Length: 133
Ligand SMILES: [Zn+2]
Image (cartoon, rainbow, N blue to C red; front, side, top):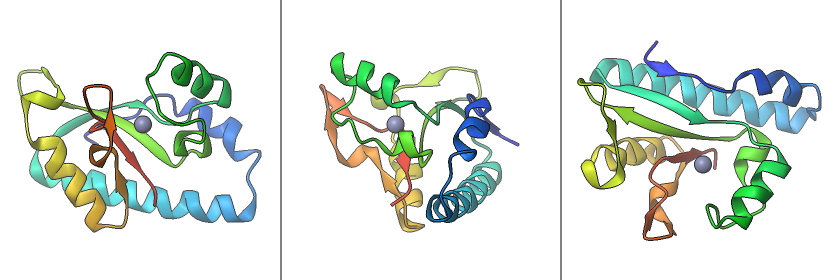
């Protein structure tokens, strides 16, 4: 698997509070993730998931620091993740290093997801963010 999953320990805490509707959404989201991972493998890309589930408290902290524009992030529902693309030399690709985030973002959108590269945050765009629609 090319996806470095981080913070998945939080998933069990989240799943104990699931409604049926949220469980359905998470299954759909997980299906998208598996497909995304297959595509990455085929392309020979490596990504690291830097954040997945986020508590409301953490969302508030990020909001207060100006690092997010909303208190109602899909991260709180477990329906969003942030990635870092790592090149073959082990270097983290930043937004201005490459168009690769846009390529992955377009792929994600073509499969029904929402990509953060479409909205501005600070001086740039949230290219690292992928979420369920
Ligand atoms: Zn995010």
